[in-house]
Amino acid sequence: MTGVAKPRHGIVPWPPVIYVAAIAASIVLG
Image (cartoon, rainbow, N blue to C red; front, top):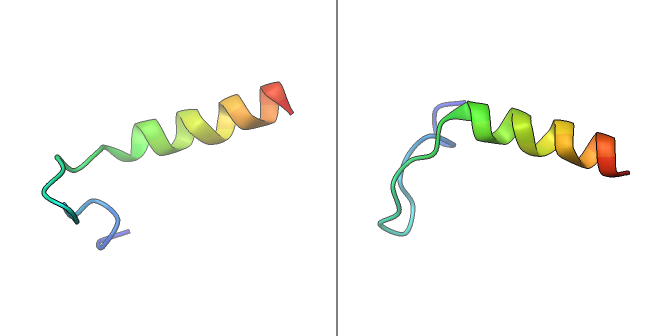
């Protein structure tokens, strides 16, 4: 997960925690 944490369009690199939270939210909602 190296290229994921890198800023792509000048955006601040988001921590993997948000990614995990998004997956958990999708599982709960879905």
